[in-house]
Image: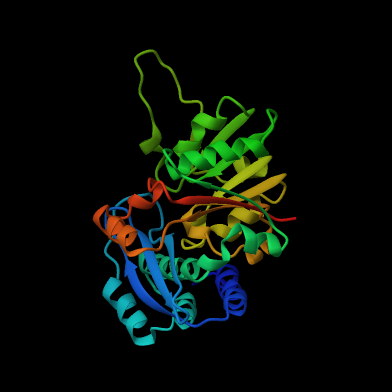
Length: 303
């Protein structure tokens, strides 16, 4: 990782997880679909426990992995095998090309999430002093489950800024809060809408960070900001927000260091680690976890 703050977040979290888990683990599988390039990593522990985790491996957008050095990353993982060592190795690597850097970062984060898997249980988290709500996706998409929970933290006077085009939460909050703005790295033109009547979307999408984050009462920040290393700037610009929430699969690891950075709430994703689900993720080119009825949303609050 190029950014020392993001690298410290991952390495420090790795140390905490290794200490709490206390069991060695090896990397069993890494899946990187080109269509929806969120890496799925699987770790097998010496005590027979299995864990899985996910993370974005692209700098911006949602689909289509650019040409990156996947064989090179896979060779590193095969040579190391130990999951803790593999995370540390990848987190300390620096690449010239941004796409390669984001790939290595994303794979490291997905493995960290897999190592954290057994710690992301309500009983375990409550024993560490966190408040936790858990729910299965059921008949909703994972993102819709986030939207339904998010309203519990909002007031009608809130100005909400969402980092990442989290369109699935808009129906739950757009008519509830004072204002909602969305920030994206993708060109703004992509989000233009044309209507016969002249009707405009309620949610404005912009690449300008400073004003929307500086004026936000609530900042909802995508986990993608970790592997693409935009997180430090986002945290700095949103420092005056009443509430800062990290969301998504790319930040679904043990939350201690995220909270130390200034987050108040984590919306984490936990997908079944069994082999059948793994194959469904492979067949679905990475899209399956968000609609798997047994995927769980963990809403973790610091106290």
